[in-house]
Amino acid sequence: MKILAADIGGTNTKIGICDERGNIDQYKEYSTESHKGGPHVVNRLLDRMSTYEDFDAIAISTAGQVNADEGYIVYANENIPNYTGTKLQEIIAGRFHKPVKVENDVNAAALGEATFGAAHAYPDFLCLTFGTGVGGAIVINRRIYRGANGVAAEFGHLITHPLSAETDNPRNAYYETHASTTALIRMARQVDPECVDGKVFFDKINKGNDKLTRLLHSWVTEVSIGLASLVHVFNPPAIIVGGGVMEQDNLVRLVEERTKELIMESFRGVKILKASLGNKAGLLGATSLFLR
Image 1: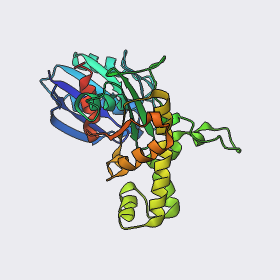
Image 2: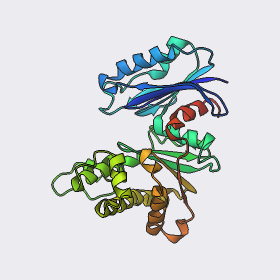
Image 3: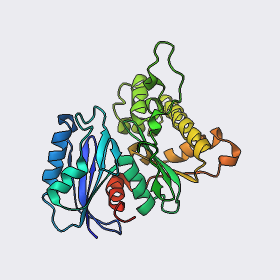
Image 4: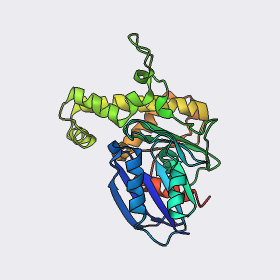
């Protein structure tokens, strides 16, 4: 079976023909131009998809909260304006007259890891991605747990800090406010204004910058606080962590060690594993929707 798969991200969109063995053919990547809004993003996708031939179905991984049963965008933040409510499945099926499935990007990444990657041996696991925010997915018996409204696992909105005395805005207390890659670089720039991105930050650490190394360990604790809470709630055999920052040497090991210091002894069998599919996880996870 050949699946035309696309992964719509806030920055880039990836597209290619995938098969049941996890092979990707005719892979392309282009700028999403998300700032121009949902209708532009969709039209741009349709134009790119129209250049492909000889496929049996279409699978979409996309940013935003997704109603997977009906294939529409329940909610999308300001990163893709006017995307909320977009009936993606209906639009694409009407254009190409093929079966279409749509999934949230983190859920898709989790399914990709379950089918082709680091979680292949685990029917139950949690998946978190660290980037602009913190995304999450819950997999039980190799299926996504969706919750009452289909949007479970907003792990980035866990309350991990006290509400500020000055404001009741919960955003300041969110896990992702303190544990995302965005948070790490924000804190790093306060220590060293040259740390404009992760590459500069980790280059300086690798050259022996003690202040930034201490900051990294503080951030690892922020990451581990959230993971420890999830371990105590779900008691999973494994947690898959992804996002570009987790590609750094030894970082996942540091996160696992710190998390195990924070959890009860009876929970310490949990494995914290680095996602293995990189930026192809969304494509392969979307593809797996037709293989399950």
